[in-house]
View 1 (cartoon, rainbow, N blue to C red):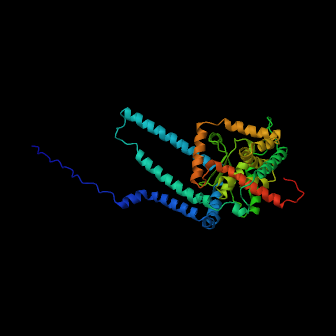
View 2: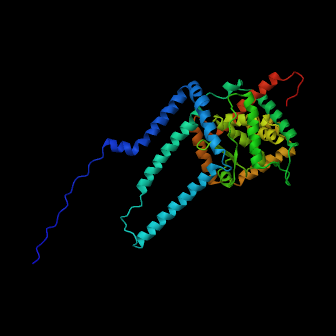
View 3: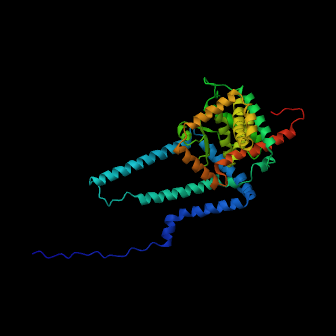
Length: 397
């Protein structure tokens, strides 16, 4: 005889509601957002305090320590991380497609989740960490006092005749230096050294500049050529400084006359001067201090292109007169540069420019990508200072 066995019914219990402590344990990392905002507001409100506590003390420690570590690598760590991130995205996409295929074939139950919610949570947490790290590692430098306050330059509104004189001076310098550099079979300026050797020259030039400006310390950071520079060209980027790795990454596919000045520009960022006009000007000063005609020419061309563009808007007739002074070699280099970047114009470049414009506006540069051109104000101040200290019978350099 078989007796019926009673079936034990499970007792349904209500799940305990998550407590505040549980939420805090899971999402505490979001507290980095208000902490980052608070640091930025404090830095914005008192640039002198930012300089004395952060830019002159804390930041150089980061730059020396992290810069020394990543400089041990003979390649760009940023480039490796970008490649790894792209590979991870491809793997994730393939995984999602395979999962969907297996569900349709009945190999998996439809209710088996992919885990997108967990993935989104981790992405949000990662972005919070990256934002906080950016603010801590370099972002506060956007709110330090301007470079002019350290250099003693008198930056003010200048009359048009000073701009004409500056453009004329730079044009004559470019003409003379163009005769001292080598060219390729097309007559375009060509660097004689490898990218690595040019990078070492850039660091040496900054070492000389550091002797004149104590605010620009000699750091163990050497520009790193990006081997797959085509993606930088597609984004219309000649160089990028990454505070996460403290590397000055250089697009070595760009026309050669850009490369030395770009290296010095990115090294200026590594010294804590994040504003684009100041990095341009400091890069120009470093090129001017170099004993290499290639660096001097590159820096002069950087200064000339921004100055003559300003003159074009201010006084077109004067622009035509100065433009007529350019040698054929300088014109050829400008034409080659324009033709190179024209090949990469399109939606990708437009998006890149828009992102860069937004990034600069968020980081205390209200005129966005136009801030690069504000280098001219510093050039004019430097030109006046050089004219004031030049002997009466001397000619402009």
